[in-house]
Each structure stands twice: as structure tokens, then as C-alpha cells.
Length: 94
View (cartoon, rainbow, N blue to C red):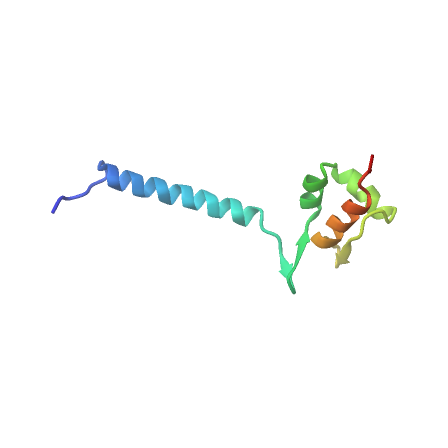
């Protein structure tokens, strides 16, 4: 039986695969959104990225009642389904 050490290609390949998996897990955790009863909730940052708008524009839309949101003890969340529905309702049809 062959001894494997740090220099062997099998070990390097194994650790490289583990590094890729760890990167994937970190990215998934960074992009995760909380779920409640099957509903996905989005943060301000998530909505800004989704709609490609600034946080100030999003705040203005909240203040004027243009976009639905939920506020729980100062934390603002958006139901993903409501944001998508709102977006569909406000699509400019040519």
C-alpha cells in the first residue's frame, strides 16, 4: 500500500475539493434569507440588490407606501412573494 503525504496529488486534490465546498457553504450562508411558514423574507440589502436601487430609494418607497414591508421592533423585512407581486404589478408593458 502506498503512503500518502502532503505532496501527493490525491491529498492535494482532496483538500482542494474541500476548500471549494467550504467556499460554496460560506456563500450560501451569506446569501440565505430567513423562512417562516414557507415564506422567504428579504432584508433591505436583498431588496436593493434585487431591484437594483439604492437604500435611500427603497426607504423613500417605504415612506410613501409604494412597496409592502413588515417592521418588527425596528427590523424591516419584505416578503419575497409580495415584492415579486409588486414588481409584476409595476412592470411597464409596451
